[in-house]
Length: 254
Ligand code: PGA
Image (cartoon, rainbow, N blue to C red):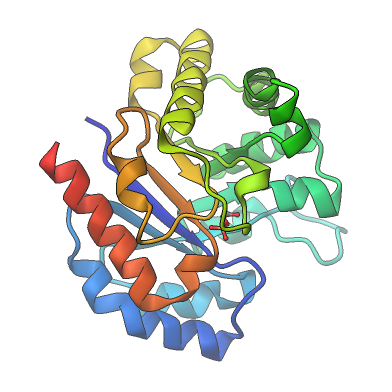
């Protein structure tokens, strides 16, 4: 049995003060929700404060990006070592990183390797663009992304994968649970080809893209979908709490 997983990706939102307010608003209720791994991914500058606010709770912290080098003359970058003091997870290969910051599969691969080496669990994001979906290339695109991101990596312990169709991110147009389940099943088979069935069976694979409290149950009901990576809706305490509560309820009922 895989423990369901729900992460909030705050993206480039919240000042340190706003991040603290948001965490205080949801902390107690979120902490009490059982049976789901809960992760908050604020901007870098808030990781320390949020980590302190969440100490002693069941809520974990993740970063949204990092560089792959350990240290050195890389002005403006943050290393895996720096993050491993502050959090357990790091989102890597998010489509916004690929699209606006030129991250290639090779860069994502280096980042995944570096994160694992530092004891961070990568939340590896993959997903197809609208044109790729319309051309019927979703399967090929996402399997290629997963294979490229994991190339040369022997044993990605703690790996989490997020399937996020780019056309569904921030658009209010989520993929259907059924379609996402099929794609996620394919990703699990891809992981099985690389690392064996047992390993693949234990890997959490999430859906992401316009997840809300009203559509989360449909995703969680699917056998292959282990949770969600939530963007916009994770910035509203009440909405995010409902998403996590509903996730827990659906998986419990199964
Ligand atoms: P969204 O973003 O929930 O706002 O669509 C999801 C993500 O990009 O991780």
